[in-house]
Image 1 (cartoon, rainbow, N blue to C red):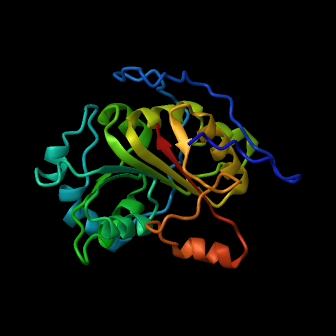
Image 2: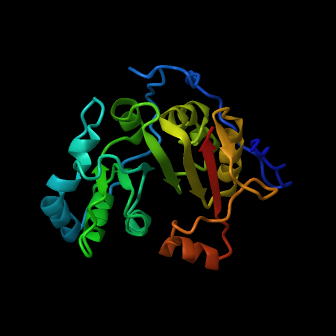
Length: 262
């Protein structure tokens, strides 16, 4: 399927593209020490503190499910155990409080989920959700996902990538901090197996338009949408979170994009 061109912007909206400050590698490139190392962060550390329950979950479950970041390739047999070492691997970037992550891991028990989140409260919240009933197919890295991508994951090692509601960085001067821009998407694409997918979702229309433009321009991906606007119907596995439901009731839109590795 040929990539679907991004839709024309409505009169009161613009497709916001970001000048790529990083080199974009070819799909045949060998990834060792990545040339796309950057100093601009795509997140800020929030000041909110973890609750006592979240801290207790980190203390009780962290040693089993939270991986220490180390700058070398992950050994999936050691991480998930030999019985799950060959299961499909999904990377989730920025899981927030883990509501969608835990739901997806429950409805897809045959998949492994490697989940990145920098905020302690979110890590604790997801660990709490993993307790009842127990979830064994999630591992967490409390670390910058782009450094995890660079050091821990080999090319063609992922069956899927989830990027749900990343920070839209509304102000023009902050657009360089957005996660979905050409150099980063090229690196995500390199880590996908052929036929693997990249699923993004946002509730900020200008960012949705930028995502569609950037993903459509990546030569290693094709759009799975059959809709004229290029967006997808929400896949069944992604739940509506309470925050998303609240936004929909207020008339806010949500845009899903699902692209596959060629």
